[in-house]
Length: 119
Image (tube, rainbow, N blue to C red; front, top):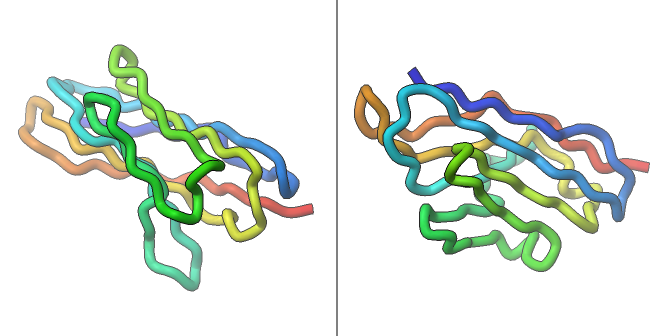
């Protein structure tokens, strides 16, 4: 089995910062792409940022220059540093991990974590 545990969400004022973390655990052999998505009640889930095993990154245009994705391969953990947060960043953020474990190749999702940007 594979488990993803997210942390770091919460309420922050506009212009503030938050750091999300997502740790993968279980009988994991290798982790390929790790990413963050977000979803609001009126929109489909959308990619925020992703990072490959080698460290190449990809960002949605709406977060470029404000968010930074990183990963610690030794800890099977991906991070999302969010700076200059805006009210429109309010959403449930989901961790997504493409990995190979004892049961085979799997695309895993975290349970989601709320980020609210409001004064």
